[in-house]
Length: 524
Image (cartoon, rainbow, N blue to C red; front, side, top):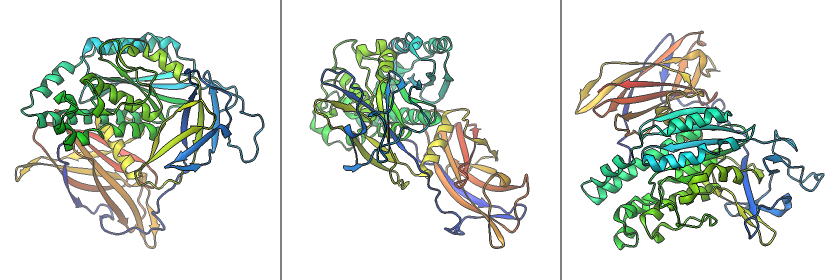
């Protein structure tokens, strides 16, 4: 688990006639929540009993349920062989769903393949075999397809390439990825050297949390590519239950009763929630394994972790779980050898359904089920979406900035670091944030000018342990409209542990959605 959150204290300063007032309530008429009309898109695969794709279905052949309630399908498009099919059933009635906006019949639809490589829990030979399963099939990508590659070493996310449509360039990048260190053996030894079973489970959960944050950050950093969105996960030892994995006895009463074990089942939920939120289908690739046997890949259902028969199947459970929740497939054991070829084939033909829920921004997760009303057919699609609040969404973005060096959706923020001091055994780092008043939303209110802003701070030490994201809402109140180049200043004290830290400070303007961010290196 992350180390305790950084404690922050704030000093509000008067600069050029603009005061920072933290407790002045803003009028609802000015700062009411901005609502967006957003569509939830579902990529739906339909197969017969033999596993063959079923085409030419019409909207009336499907039923959409959200939290058990039947909802209308607002948009419907069939994709066959990567190409937008003609409108099902010919001319539509006024009550029939519209096509997905922005695409036309006969148009070639591209797919964006986002590759995440785990260097932390993998060992080099098996990881490289999984990478080769992608590298060897890059030539199968179509002219509108693209691929980006990211690797994670336990502390840093490295963007090996942003979106590229060049097979030769992508093969070179994947070839270089095979030369990167893989830390799986060292990680395993560190975890096994824990002084107790409980300490080992906690350490494993911490490192799995790091993986979860890295994947979630990667998804958010590549949130809006064109076409269908697919993520390939070159996975290491990610057991669904670290407690059961470490004890090697998932049937023991001690493990079943263990509160830590029950918590372990929820570790990977943020991955599929983020993927579903952004419309990504997950295809996890088992980089380890015994090379043959294991579960039948034609069975997409994740196995219950308590029913696992071996540590290897604990890992399979995780991969199947992530795939199942997003409508993808897990590449288990021998499936890693031709993983990209299988993924390309699996993402070429599907139905694209869309609906518009009532967005509340309350962070609730909603169950989604798509049924095919014709007998003898089975359907595969993602099974949930999250009504994420804007506040949590921005915090996730700031968390991403801690792992990625440069992010295109942020503007730079000027922050000065003062001399650190000690107070009651804590290390205090004073920060001075310069707020560009002419670049944030400042609205007139009577004879005053008012802005409502948010500061966020998150830190990570040199071992990769992260704090929680601290949120500091505040207001700017002034008697004059800000002039070009005018700055407001907020100072705050960040309380961190000993040692070197990376610190990300972010300013968010909720009305415009603009985010200003900087990364600071705090030496030990």
